Length: 227
Image (cartoon, rainbow, N blue to C red; front, side):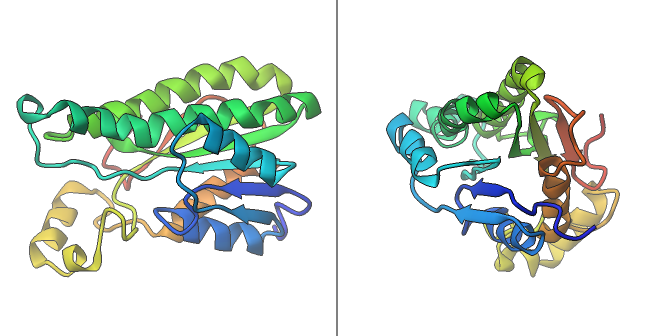
């Protein structure tokens, strides 16, 4: 179905990072007017100003990336490393959502799609801070999702892992035979998902075809995690 976002204005955060490029490209192909933002979402004022400057927003794509702090055991986590993922992943999600919801509630229509992580759904060693922040995103989406569902606003999250992006899977890692072998062991699908495949799921959640999925964390990880 062509032009699934025709007439819609979409705000994509961190548009040049993580899942931003694939999302912007696909959503434009589908007829959406995309506001591709790459500003630092450092505080509530920055987030509210971004939403105000964007004007009408039919779809918010909360694309938020963070270093995953892998390799640090929980006993070695210092306070700064514990708090950092929350400042990058959780606080901006709340500030953006809080800023955009009033207009969606007033129109009785809107979508918020969050690119999250499957590490919120399955335990993984030495990523306690990152996993906890990603899990906080899931809890937030579940709570806000049911809160705004009566206003015909749908809030959902893609719980992804093993998806191509330079943020977490840089070329130097992809070229390592040990990583390729590990991928085949860890992921039932035996490969990384493509950014385009991920963006296609986001497109469905952002489109008018998806009005009855509410407050969900949908795994997208090639079978690495199942719910």
